[in-house]
View (tube, rainbow, N blue to C red):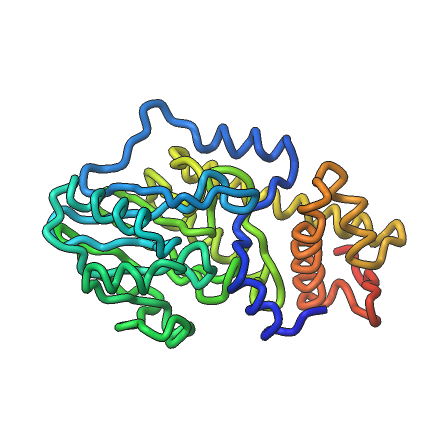
Length: 306
């Protein structure tokens, strides 16, 4: 088992955004993302970083918001090509300057180029207050329900822990747009990696998003999500299904993370098996907090089926 410091070290080195839980889920998420002729509002641009991979899909989506004084949400890479792409996107939208850089969370595929963009543009970097000092060059912090201005409007900060304890989404109420970071992806599901990742918090964050009127989700990875409510509910159903599978595995005598993972994730490739174990661990820890499971060494024992 990893302690918090070890887990954060891993999370800082690798992207832990994405896992294909099953072909069925992939198809369902694709349907939830579909809407004919989906485009962003005119004051929002997207430049996808050149960091495609098993955990990042086509790459990290970096968003430019505003046509006067612009805000950039997430900066994945410090390469000149990525800096040029973001700046050119801002210029194409008519932005006079990039004023602020907002980070959804501290995983390297979302913040790895923030300091470089600050150096190029003079923009001020913001981060959730629980992560103050993580980069060593932040200029301001934000918390839940704070509002951050851009040229033509403002973004509301929604602290949405679960994938990462300092994770934030940003909501633009004028066009009902949610910048979801890794809380919601275009395809697949976010990895919840204990101890910093927390399944209880994650489910609460998803449920909270249902309270908002959202017409379009702009995720940190993958395509735009044109059916937000359906997508969020699909995510909740999927996690409930996984929890039931974990409980069923415990009932059959599977009582280690490895054994439970092998029983549930039968269609996951070997490279993703360890990532799947993180999700099983997150479900087990949620069940322990609820008093339904107890841990004895490396074994987990079911206490209640309720």
